[in-house]
Amino acid sequence: MIKKITVNTIQKYKNSHEKFSVLTAYDYSTAKYIDEAGIDIILIGDSLAMVALGYENTNAIGVCEMEIFTKAVARGAKRSLIVTDMPFMSYHTTEAEAIENCGKMIKAGANAVKLEGASDYIIKTITHLTQIGIPVIGHLGFTPQFLNAIGGYNIQGKSFNSTLKILEEAKKLEQAGVFAIVLEMVPEESAQFITENLKIPTISCGAGRYCDAQVLVSDDLLGKFSDFKPKFTRKYGDMKSLILSCAKKYNEDVKNGKFPNEEEIFKLKEEELDQLKLHQREKINQY
Image (tube, rainbow, N blue to C red; front, top):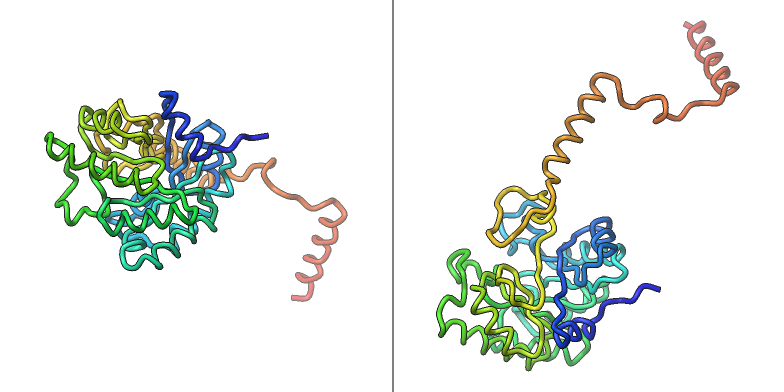
């Protein structure tokens, strides 16, 4: 029997100083393979807005879309903890709407949700979510949903004071009940300081080696998305070249008649073929 990763498992990793892994997935088959590979957390990241749907940024995606992809991933993953990114403006208007939208993701198959920021409003919302049984991951440092306010893809926590500010926010999130915090685009030393001063685990997204976990976008890891490559990613495969090569070969085989071959077609039984030929001859004779 497959032992499911839970929020308790994640905390045990932190307590025992054992690293854990996080990857994004957006579809059934990718989730299935990532799950079989032993990845601890599968994140249905709002990054899918850019890498899967071709939007300009992550703010363009909505609740309905995230719900569809969550359902697909949940069908494929049996062991990994499934976490859904709550999209831009899905938890910023009213607390009731935030709870309703997060609840949709849990009903769709997510085991937890991820929210960005640590404003008083977000802290209050997270507190209520955790109190009603919806596990939450926080997200600090560079927060993509605040891209317009931040003014670009800027590294956060580059000074002592700014690092302390992130730590203070992380402490608020910890007190509100989040079971982990993503630190994105934070200098390694700052992320290490924050990690060592929290009871809950941190997940590095370009925050160096001393967080409790690492997260990558699967399309970056697989070499599938090539519009740009963040500094902190590593390409473990070259799916772009593989897809191009396979599609080109298929195109050639179709046009030169090599696909399909004898083994790739269905054929009538001999008696059915004879009847078909007879019918064709009768039709021809009518004209």
